Image (cartoon, rainbow, N blue to C red; front, side, top):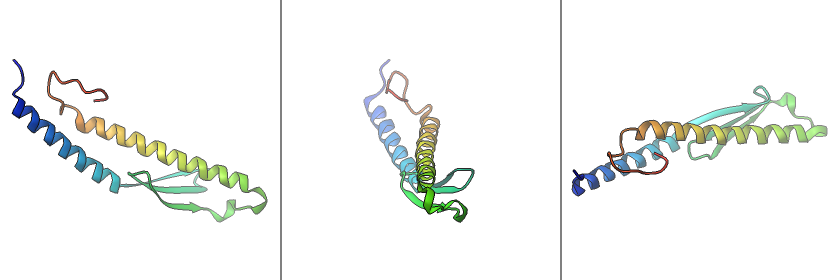
Length: 108
């Protein structure tokens, strides 16, 4: 038996509204990650925008700026990776069971 087209359209519209709400809520969340055992901390939101950067004074050495640059890059990259992973994990959890039977959408 084929699904009713009107019911299917309503389900898709509900899925879209739920996804929009999830994206908005996730984008407003903040996360904090560090590198160098906490020497550099990055605060990032769910939209992957850097909101803050905290560097401990003890690691600031004008004669060795490369280490500081590496730590900042490591912290930012970690933050971006972890936010993306959190997004994918939560999206997968939220969309579980939302796809009607017989509908195949790659990635869900």
